[in-house]
Amino acid sequence: MKLNAKETIEAGKAILGIEFGSTRIKAVLVDQDNRPIAQGSHEWENRLIDGLWTYTLDDIWTGLQDCYANLREDVLNRYATDIYELAAIGISAMMHGYMAFNKAGELLVPFRTWRNTNTGKAAAELSELFVYNIPLRWSISHLYQCILDEEKHVADIDFFTTLAGYIHWKLTGEKVLGIGDASGMLPVDPETKTYYSSMVEKFNKLVAPKGYSWKLEDILPNVLVAGENAGVLTAEGAKALDPSGHLKAGVPLCPPEGDAGTGMAATNAVKQRTGNVSAGTSSFSMIVLEKDLSKPYEMIDMVATPDGSLVAMVHCNNCTSDLNAWVNIFKEYNQLMGIPVDMNEIYGKLYNHALTGDKDCGGLVSYNFFSGEPIAECEEGRPMLVRSVSDNFNLANLMRAHLHASVAILKMGNDILFNDEKIKVDRITGHGGLFKTAGVGQRILAAAINSPISVMETAGEGGAWGVALLASYMANNHDSLTLPEYLDKVVFAGETGVEIAPTEEEVEGFNAYIKNYTDCLPIEKKAVECKKQ
Image 1: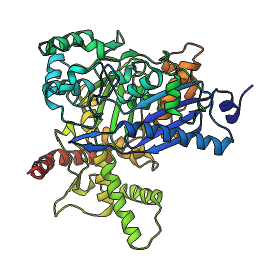
Image 2 (image 1 turned 60 degrees about the vertical axis):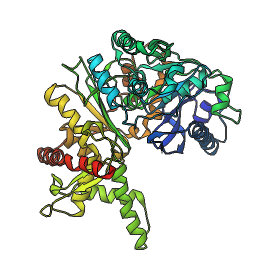
Image 3 (image 1 turned 90 degrees about the horizontal axis):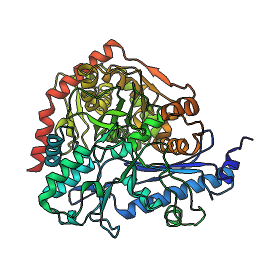
Image 4 (image 1 turned 45 degrees about the vertical axis):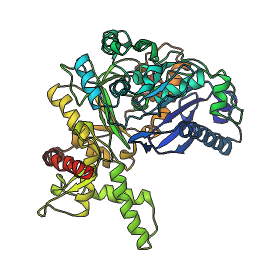
C-alpha cells in the first residue's frame, strides 16, 4: 500500500538530503517516489579572515542544526508529526577546499574554502608534475601550498578532506568520500574508481625530503561510488544533527558528495553526452565525456560523476553576486521613492527587459569579479562596468551586460570543449538562481555556449534534492540499475524539461560581447593592481 507523506515520515521511510552551499544550507525530505515533502534551510556567509575565505566550525554545526530544526518545524506545520527515523541520509557540500586534522581529530587550521586563490604556485607545480590540470581550489593544491609556505601544522596531519567529507565523518565515524567530491581533492582514475596511484607516488616522492611521518594515501579519505553504503548515523552523529534527541541512530548514509555531483543527479545529467550548468553565487558546467580530452587545459578541470564517469568541468568563482548587487540598487531606488518592494517582481522586470536590449549589450562590458577568477588570471575581485561614450547606454543593455557577465567566463571554457575538442552533447540542463526568472538566464546561456538549454521544474530543488536522490539510489535500488538508469527510469521517467535554443543573432551578439570582454580584461587586472597600492 502506498503511504502518504505523513505516513512515510512516521514509518521512517523518508530520505533526507542536506547540502552546504556558499550562502545557504538546505535540507530536503523526500518520499518513496523521490518527491520533496518537506524542507528546511539556514542562511550563512563565508568570512575573510587573515586574507583567507572560511567558515568556522561553529558556523558549520550551528548552521546544520538550525537547518535541521527548520526542517522539523516544516514537518510539524505540514503534517503534525516529527522525524524519528529515516530510510537514508545524504550529505553534500561545496567542493574542494582544505580541512586538515591531527590524530585527536582537531582542526589544525581554519577551513579554507574553494574560493581562496592563494595556491597559484602549488597548482602550477602540481599540474606540471602530474601532466594534468590541477586547479587552485583543489584540496591537493591547498595541501602543497601549505608545504611550500612551510606551515608548521602540515607535520601533524592525520587526515584531510572536504567539507562534505568532514560532516559525514562526524556523523558516521567513516573517513570516506564520494568519487565526484574526491576528484576535487586529487585526480581519480575512471578505470580503478580511486585516486591515480601514479600521482600519489609522484607526490610522495616530491615531498619526501620534508620527512613527514605520513604518506599521501594515508591521509586521504577512501573513495566510494554511488550506490555503496558509506556507514550509518552514530548516536553521537544523531545528537550532532538533532540536539533535541528525537532522531534515532542507525540510519544508513550514502557516500558524501560535492555540489557538482548532486547538481548532476538533480538534473539527470550523469549519463555520457549529457551536461548541466549550475549558476548561482559561483557557476560551473559539467559535460560527461565519452573519452578523455586530447590534452590538459588550464580552463578545464577533469572530475567525475557520482558513479565514476569522466567529466569536463569549467568552474567560475563568480556568477550572480554582482548581478544581485545591481538589482539591489533598484530595490533601494524603489524604497527611496516610496514604491512597495517585491524582489521577485524587480528581478522579473529587469531580467525580461534585458532581453529587449542590443544582442551585443550595446558595447557595454561588465566584470562580475567579487573574488579572484583563475580562468581570467585575476587573483582578486574588482566588480566593474566598462563603457565608452559611443556605447548604447540604457537600462536594457546595462542589465543584459550583467547577465552576459554572469556566464562570460563559463563561455570561454566551453568554447574549448565544443570548438576545439569537438565534444558532442545530447542535452544540457540549467539549474540555480540564474534560471529562476523563466526563460531569461536560459536564453542568455544558450547564446553564450551556442547550444539548446533545458530547464526542468524540479531543477529548482537543487543539490539537497540531488543528494537525497543519491541516498535513495543506495537505499531503494532493488533492481540493481546503474545510476543513469535509476535516474532515467525511476526518478525522472522521461522528463526532459523545457528547451530553449539560441538564435543566430543572439549567438553573434554574445560573440561580439565576449570579444569586447577579453579585449578589456587588462583594465580589470589593472584595477586589481591599483587597489593594492
